[in-house]
Length: 409
Ligand SMILES: Cc1cc2nc3c(=O)[nH]c(=O)nc-3n(C[C@H](O)[C@H](O)[C@H](O)COP(=O)(O)OP(=O)(O)OC[C@H]3O[C@@H](n4cnc5c(N)ncnc54)[C@H](O)[C@@H]3O)c2cc1C
Image (cartoon, rainbow, N blue to C red):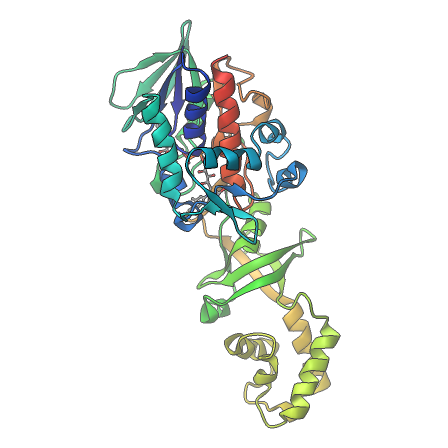
């Protein structure tokens, strides 16, 4: 049996390795338009490759996917983060789980992840067709004909589509998979960037770009929801894990300068406003002739304290002994509810694509198409996306594994 796996990223490599290791009779063709495998895997996690999560409770893990969590249930039980970690360890990639439950190779090098697959492919003499761009797939009586941009067509029995989404297009994931799937009768949902930074209307974040907080709380007024986690101010607004989670949940919200998204930021999650006021008063009593921004500095860096005073409307040259109770209240309120007006997402630097091949048309127990027998899907091409923390790669490994296992049956 000849099986073509189209796309040599995380899902495609796992599907190919799974077939190689479980069915020695199947002939695997791993087809990749780049000249090498796993370009995105190598750059993931800042080059360290956050391969999966250290979480073990499957319902908790599935709750980290704004889209596709329920669909992933079967794949995730069969190839859980724990099973995946054992798999990598057995294939010569020791892993470590960091305090925030992100799992990385001990070497901190994503290349080692790809090398583990390359070793399997050389052991099983897998046919890897590099520089082969698939432009169309036709179904015929014998199975499928894969048509390439420049090379001769290839006849196979089964096909697994693992062409990824359309984020970070320079890695090769240019959204080609959607039209290939549509040509075979599938529907794709609306697509949107997810896990992106956000642009604010306010220009002041630029002045403190690089200042980060480990535990801030974002409230989105329109959605009545809050997100807590690390974030960083950037030249254009805000970024970091809590912002990525927010961007994921608002992936399909329409907002711009005319219809902005109002959010408020609490930098002092563990402090009540009354406690902030008490601490400010104590500082004022001890330092009556110091500038008021230094009283605020006990909570946040001085550069942001200066911005706070400006934003609240207090004269920057005002000394502590001239500050009124009203101004103290305003300060505590600002620190707990910093208003930010979100007008754009940083499309182009997003990590994943939200949306994809409609999950209603794919069997979640096998990854086989319900429309076109012999056709399978795995990875980001599907309408599945998760938060940061290893969840997107985990979804690709788990669905790639399941598609591989079922494709040769
Ligand atoms: C900068 C960045 C950092 C990330 N970090 C993490 C992280 O640390 N942890 C995590 O869990 N997730 C991370 N992600 C997300 C994760 O990398 C992806 O969700 C995952 O790699 C998707 O795997 P995939 O196999 O479905 O698709 P891809 O990895 O995108 O692979 C698709 C492959 O198909 C090939 N292809 C496309 N079109 C064609 C064609 N026409 N013919 C032949 N081949 C084709 C592409 O060249 C590519 O190699 C990150 C993403 C980015 C962009």
